[in-house]
Image 1 (cartoon, rainbow, N blue to C red):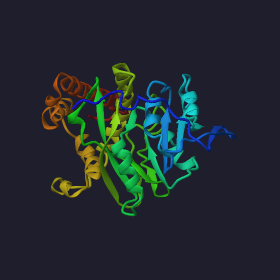
Image 2: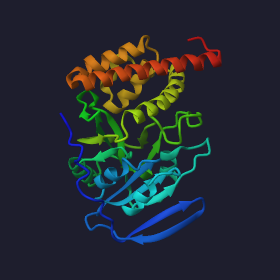
Image 3: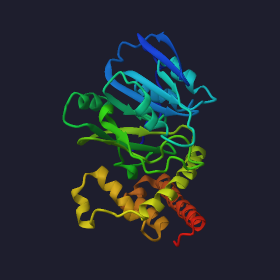
Image 4: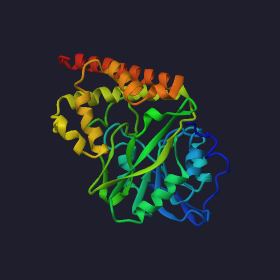
Length: 326
């Protein structure tokens, strides 16, 4: 399956009408009115954590032009990110990470004032498809769940990877019932000011939406490699934590869990496994069907194995510094 890369780029961003644009700079705030597009009536607040995302942000904003509130949480971008957000009528909030305490998403969830009860978190390299938009609208019209998971479709080297799905992420939820998990890893140097693989949690049940959330980074392979080097540092510390925790679920009980919870529990098993780089390749290429994605699939699966090797090497270094036997 191939995705048309111009799907969300065909039209210019429409500036919304009757919407306040707010820039928070420390304790000061400036408000200027901006027009809001008449179609932007869906009562969902979309939050985008960003840093230097001028390549990706326009398409992300176009894909959520239907939302009646869009908040861009920036970390002092030096490119045109904030100007792009302003021109789209988004509400821009500046976040400065002190090196300790909550990172960007947790801070935004705690500190931002939302126009709506329902909040949807979106990365700048992600696009909400029309089908997903329709499902989001339907979801907030029910009282069935406190949050909803979406299935990410990953576009790599111009190809939509079948082996990547399903990839469930909790992104839509009632903000008054939500928090982001604290794994105690928010003060690690070299891992940035945004959460890496910490997940949102809600007090209540969660549902699953089938339409895809497209992940398509326009910055290319260099950005992917740089990002995963940072992720590997964080993962090495997480593996050390997971190895010290009780798994809590017996193997034959795994299938009784929902897919989202099961994935979290499996990480505790995974951190204890030997030969993880080889296993990662075999899982992605054979079990998840990476071979069906051709040469691009082989490339991606090989990179995932290399990523796991990088985590293992960083974990070994970390344990050596801490005097822990591997």
